Image 1 (spheres, one colour):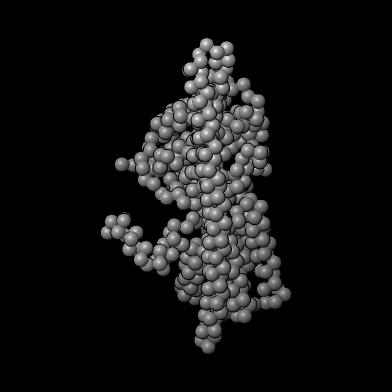
Image 2 (image 1 turned 90 degrees about the horizontal axis):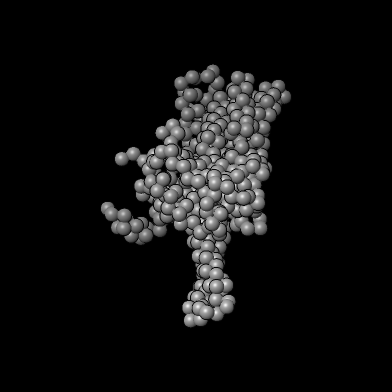
Length: 434
């Protein structure tokens, strides 16, 4: 079946269309409301919580089964979220994998095991309900659903294989427990799904509004371009006029301003498609892409153009969308130019450096500048939509758009910076084979 026929068939089935949108097309959120401090507090809660409840269920309010070794291991898992390598960048792939693994082991696996070993006691029935609600509150509903099923299944298999010397859950209580689990699970799923839809709707609405506003700016810019044409026409009619040279320069400057503004509008309209980025498989040459973007960028002055240095160590090919990726490089060059301007730079050669190369079989594009840099406190937030380190000119979408495009190509983007020293953005991409 062709893609067009499949799309037409899908359009005739609203339920399947909705499932496709929610299950496949909706962006994944491995960590809900991510921030370094949230990860630290979650890690600390896990570390202290196991110590506290291990004491409560063994000494104060003893339960039939309690395991000190499991509690210690679970506490140590919580420590991993408190390390800077994991929590400094919640958008990092390593952080997301560690976070997902820790909460899968801590919640559905461990809680299901304790529930089975305690014969489904009242305490652990309530704990299982709390576990489901917590799990759906910290991660994407699809990951939570898959994790709950696989974690519970793994705990049951281990329970059957190891056969701990504990009574089975009473048969007359199993149906009651199943109803309680189903109630907690269904409401956790519904609340998480509706919250995800609400977050996407708010962001999509705001981005669409910004895209419309950017597009509407073309009307006054067209008028400004016509004024520039009229000035140039008058200069051609009266070339001997004493102010003709000044008027010609004014017209050229006006046209340059219009071109620059139209370029910025194109960027904002692309940014407004932040959540509608499909996964492209177009083969893109990194070196060619960099050269084309650097050549076409509307530099405000010749000094800013001449400070850009391009170094091609090794070219590589990756799968993405050339148009979208050019917007990524545009955004990074624009940010670097603003940073240089804020630092009152003299724009020496190499003040803005773009390098293309390979490292460990992965392609790398590095955009480095010697500008003002980024405050360390702002670094964890710069890839979030609507967050800007420059409130006077930034809209907070450029870097979020960059991250979405790079991730849709299977890559990652990282930043290293020191305030008043400069910034280095590194894009890593899988090299296309065949």
